[in-house]
Image 1 (cartoon, rainbow, N blue to C red):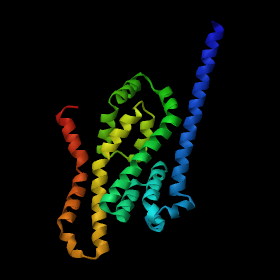
Image 2 (image 1 turned 90 degrees about the vertical axis):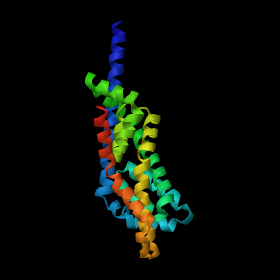
Image 3 (image 1 turned 90 degrees about the horizontal axis):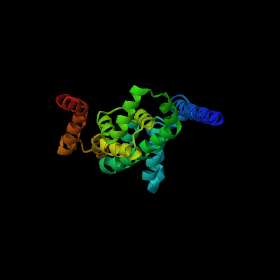
Image 4 (image 1 turned 120 degrees about the horizontal axis):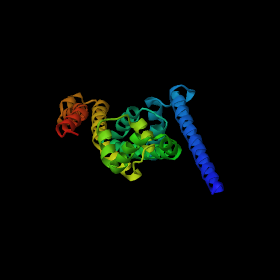
Length: 238
C-alpha cells in the first residue's frame, strides 16, 4: 500500500515537472517570437514593403506564400492589421479576404495547439475551485465564448494562445473563431482593397462611387460592433 502511494506521488511529481518544462518552453517561444519580430535584424524584412515585394516576385505561388506568411506571422506575434492590410492591397478586396481569412484561421488553430500542448497542463495545475468553475463553464460554452470575444475584437494572437490554456474544445474554438472574425475581416479587406484599387487605377472620380461609400460605412460600423454587443448583453442581463 505504501509502495503504491509512493508510486502515485512520484507520478504526480513527474507530471508536474513535465508540465513546468512545457510551460517554460511556451514562455521561451513567446519571448523569442517577440524578440525576433520587434528587436532582431529580421524585423527589417517583416515590413509591409519587403513582404509585398517578396509576394509580387512569387508569381503564381503568391497566394500560398501569403497564407504561409500569415500563419507564421500569427504565431510570431506579427500585427494582424499589417498582414490583413497587405493581403487586401495585393490581392484586392475579395481574393484578399479569402486569403486573409484562411491564413488567420490556420494561424489561430496553430497558435491554439501550441498553447494547448505546452501550457495547458501547467495552467490546469494552478486552477483552484473558483477558476475551475470558470474553466468548466468555458468548456460547456466554448463556441459562444470564443464567438463573443472575437466579435468584441479581443486581441487576436494573445487570445489564440490563451484559449489553448483553457478547457475549450478545439472545434468549438475553431468554429467560434471562423464566424467571429468573418465580419471584421471582410469589412477591413473590402475597405483597404477598394481604396487601393481606386488608387492604382488613378480614376479618382471613383472615390465618389457607391463601392467606396459602402466600404467606408462598413469600416466605420465595425468599430461600433463591440459597443452594440455590450448593449445587447446588458439588455439581456447577462
